[in-house]
Amino acid sequence: MSNTKFDAGLALRKEVLGADYVERSLASADDFSRPMQELSTEYCWGHVWTRPGLSRRDRSLLNIGMISALNRPHELKLHVKAALTNGLSREEICEAILQVAVYCGVPAGLDSTRIAREAFAELDAA
Image (spheres, rainbow, N blue to C red):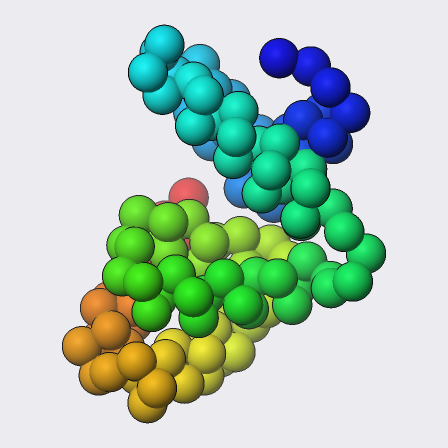
């Protein structure tokens, strides 16, 4: 698949999430999962993340809150790492998760804290 929004989304997705991760995701896609990879790349990354209205840092901060509230651990770990790439500090990520705990419940905050710590440990070990 190649079009302007997909190509822009793919480039940005690789910058934020890491080229290796994105290339593995696309390479491992089969006939069932490929449409979701294409949708995510074009729609999320190409249409929304490339918009000028918010910085990458702000989008990452929003994602930490929303993904924590939705209890999506795999995506949260990925976006915690991306948030560091986009300029958030570990302290700011901690503060965002505390905010989630207050407004979405302590269990969401506890799970999100655990997942963020796992992400930090993986980065520190690399």
